[in-house]
Length: 289
Length: 238
Image 1 (cartoon, rainbow over the protein chains, first blue to last red):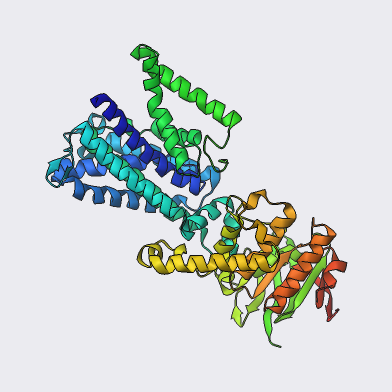
Image 2: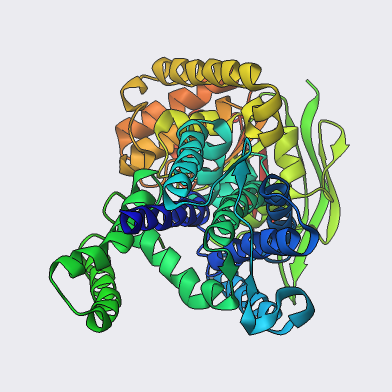
C-alpha cells in the first residue's frame, strides 16, 4: 500500500513539473532545457532554510517561491530577448551553471553529499510524514494548480501569452510588449516548479544535485512532448505514462535490473513514435517548433 | 483638414545603399493614400520607418503633432498606428474572436496585477470586448468564423480577419502592405468595401499596392515612388 502511495506522490510531483514545463513550452513556445533548475532552486531553498535556520515548511515555501521568482527574473532579463534556438541555448547554460553551483558551493549546498534531515511539513499541528498524508497533501496542491490553469487559460493574459508564441512581431505591432508576456510565463513556470521542488525536498527529506541535472530537464521536456503541449490534460497524461510505465513492466515480471533500463528504452521509443506519427503529442494543441 | 501624418526630408541609408531618399509628404485625416512603385522602390522601408521598426538616418515624422521618428515600435503602435503585413499575421492557434480581443489596447485582464486585484472588472471588460469582436465580425458578414481556429482559415479569410483587428484597438492610421495580393476579384471587392467603411468610421489609410487599378477605385491620393524618391504625387485622383 505504502508503495502505491509513494508512486502517487511521485506522480503528483511530476504532474507539477510537467505543468510548469507546459507553461513555458506549451503556452509560450519557449523550449527550455532548464526546467530542473527551478525545481532544484525550490528544493534547495526550502532545504537550506529548514535545516540551517529551522524554518517551518510554511515559511520555507514562500522563501522557495521567492528564490525561484528572483532566478526567473534575472534569467528572463538576460535571456528573454533572444529567441527560439538561442533561448534554448541560454537555458542550457543556466542548467549547467546551476548544477556546478550546487555541486561546488559546499558551505551552502553541501556539494555532492547533498542535504539531509529536512523536516516534513506540518499542518494544524499534524505532521505530514506518512505516504498517505503526503499523497493527500500533494493531491490538494496539484488540484489547486490544475484549478488555477482551468481559470488561467480563459484569461486575456493567457491569450496574449499564446499570441506571443504564435507571432511575436504581430503582438508588437498591436502595441503590446511581447517581452512582458514571456517574462510572466517564465516566472509562473518557475513558481510551479519551485513548489514541486519544496514538496520533493520535504517528502524525501534528502536532496543532492543529481536530482536536478540536464537529464532531468530533458526528461520533463519529453513528458510534455509525449502528453502534448498546450492543454492541461497533455502534461498530466505524459506524467502518468512516465510514472506508471515501470509499474506495468513489473506486472510483466521483469527483473528490476532490466526493468529500470527497459523503462528508459520504452520511454525513448514512445518519444520517437510520437514525434513520427503524432507530432502534437497525445493531447497536444499545437506542434512544437 | 489637418494633417495626421507629416513626413519631412526622410532619409534612410544602410552601408552605401539608400532605400529612402529625401521623401516628404503629408497625409490628411481620413485620406486613403496609395503608394505604388516597382519592387525595391523603397515602399516597405518607408513603412518600416513610420512604424519604428527601422530608424531614419535623417528627417522628421510627425503623427498628430508628435515627433515619432525616435520612438520605439511599441510606443508608435500605442499612439494608434497599426500595420498589416502582406502575409496575414494572425495568432494561428487562437480562435478568431480571441485574435480580435487580443488586438484591443485596453483590456484590464492583459495585466497579471489587474487580473488578481480587479478580477470582476477585468472579466466584465473581456466579455464586452468579445461582444464587440462578434459585432464587428457580424458587420462584415464574417460571424460564422468567430469560433474557428485562425490557422485553419483560408488565406483570404485570414486577410479579412487581420483587417478586422485594426477596428478593435482605436487605430487612427492603418498601413496596409499589399492588401489585395493573392486575393480573388470577389474578395478584393469585399476588402475594398471594408476599407471604405472603416474609413468612414474615422480611420486613415496608407496602402502599398501593385494592383493600382483596383486600389485607385478607393484611394483619393496616389504617391508613386522610384529608387527611394517620390516620383509622382497626385492629389485627388478619385
